[in-house]
Length: 321
Image (cartoon, rainbow, N blue to C red):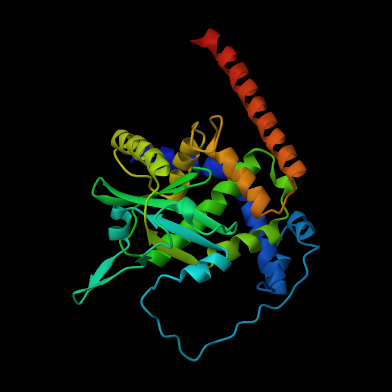
């Protein structure tokens, strides 16, 4: 009990001083004002500083078209032709992940996982708008855990306590964790100054609107997933539990994405979090290469500042030991 109280206190402190938390709340507020989802009475309770932040937002009523009836069909893989022309997420599932997303109903197997357009990811028709991810599933402490890694950047995320065959729940968790991790990292490294939040979010949400699941693997990405799974199992054994919430899981993601990786197509070792930030700035923030380079340099400056601060703190504590 004492451990849980201490852990929750520490998490609350981190959230309070985390620049992502403040940025995320402001971005959500701007989106709600933009779509006229708040009444004048609700807006009147905002602080003066908050009202100044949303002063430039143009309020536009959000129109909803209601359907008379929605008939839910079993999830069916989209055709390769649709995949070639649409911005979407492509989840390449290992055997274990394919079984995780499948279920049996009245003796019939129902699965979102279909046959890929080609057996090798790199052999797919070129499509700069598709995001290729590899998904693997294991069981840790009798709970389902999903590991997802971006094939291009090797940026990874883990999802503990996953619910079997809950495809929609997984996609929702995935999209939220992905954007939260990106914005948190950008905020901590002073990169948000280059990001126009509303166009970025519109592009990001568009990319997450459509998904396909294919049964196929990727040798290089699988090797990294296996390493991450081994680390996770060791940590879970040491903790005595799985990450209790998305915040704790995100911190594990951050540690893994700050680990040097090497892969085909890269001359040198690299950090997946830096590669993903560059990918995000280029594709979703719409930055040109000169501004991406400026953001990359600023990120490195911040890291050096943090390292210098840690070194000074270490030197100050040495006489006390």
